[in-house]
Image 1 (spheres, rainbow, N blue to C red):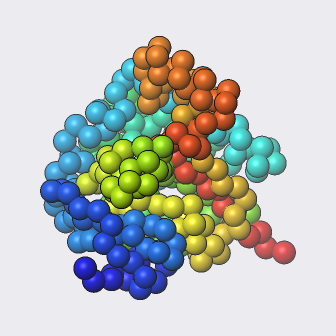
Image 2 (image 1 turned 60 degrees about the horizontal axis):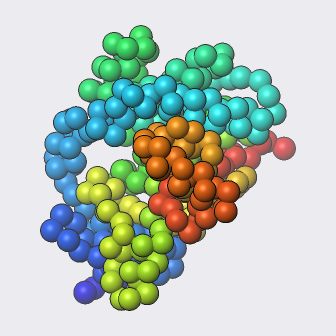
Length: 285
Ligand SMILES: [Zn+2]
């Protein structure tokens, strides 16, 4: 099959990687990103997002736990910011737990969400108003508005990640922090399946994920927009703060396996998990 120009790094070195009845993925040999080609239509995606999407992935029973995770994350970001609170933006705020955690810590906050259904949930349950729009730029934020922009499990859903990250850079204050987390693809099953010439039988590619990022492709996106990369890490099975009692893993057995993997530091190998990158907008010198 033909090579398609990589939507992330612009290289022409991409080739067909994987197909099933729902989607076709190409992989860029330069930056390692995998991307759907052709992309799903907005109508097809909207049909999924406007169904019970958020309820399925974030049911009531995990919300308190998710909020604890966000407190942990905000604690880390506050240390990186050298203390103090300020103004933060959560892009794709879903059921609003990051905003709730931020409010409990004394932050000023804004949420942006493209699902009107999720925004209504946040309004009804937390009394928080969310800006509903499809693209971040439609929110028309002033330049240099935020100390922190948080975007967790959103970038892989966007048609134009570069445009969004440039907009984030624009609306961050000098010295402001950008926290970005995406799902991680690699795991032991993928590794073994690729060894035997099969393509990733251990991974469930999702129609709503337009991109499957590598760490290299994330770095590329942030750096080309002007961000200084402060930190990157892989978080997988065994990361104690992620899986305190099971945002993703809910049985005692999976907790036990999580703990064992953590003790032996197997999380990188076992995965899936997540890729996280933190960038800082250069302060004015
Ligand atoms: Zn590329």
